[in-house]
Image 1 (cartoon, one colour):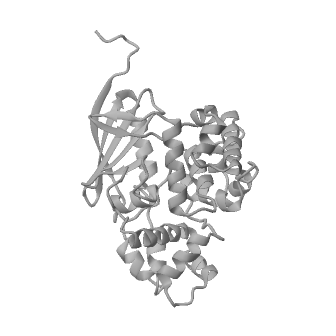
Image 2 (tube, one colour):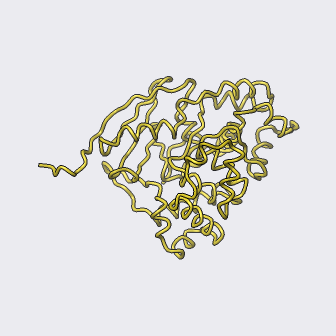
Image 3 (cartoon, helix red, strand yellow):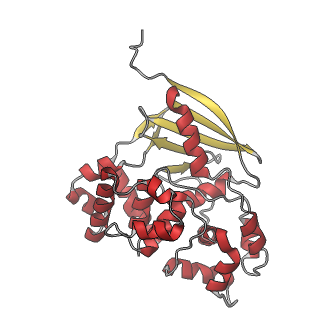
Length: 311
């Protein structure tokens, strides 16, 4: 007989309604950035798979889209925590977000219209935790997409043990506690600069001490939330904006002074003149979706939109 304290682990299916149009492949593509991402996995048949270790034991989430208006979520883990995991997948995959304003505004912008039409159905994803958002934003500061992705991959492998499930290996995003407990030498060897490592340490300390919490950011308007994030050493306005966009789903922000964003504007607009300030005014409260569309445009040139994960 199973001891009373042992969690009941089982596999259950849940149907998640989505605000149409919705495309799982596009949404996961902007969440993971590159197919080399070893945490957010797309299988060859288009299923999204994510492992978590922040529950009472490992939790594996598998998401498939067989219908335009819903997703099928399969959870494998402690059954008592399935409701929490279902809510987390709602958050991460932006299933309830309505983008009417962005779609209408994008249709009036000649160079953006074709891209928005091709990418119709992408929703704004959110990282699983504020910690994950901060780590990604810091690691991706001032380096190329490929270089940052490689460094983060090495950090994840160095810090966390892989999870094996039905013959497949998955990597959960390392917790703040596990990163804080990892030696400086090991993290530097993974490719982190001393400055970025120091910033991660400062963020970890702020989160563990309660000086910084997701709740205190949620209750603030975006300008005040950015100011609050910037009090943490190593976080500047650009990093804070990316944290709000990718970590809290704030679409009223857009990362300015980003060299990759500038290149992506040129990629999409071609020879057409682009008044960025005017474009952002037209997109208004959902201008953050432009960031995701520009990323998708770049991934499209790499044939990395909806591509099966390589890891």
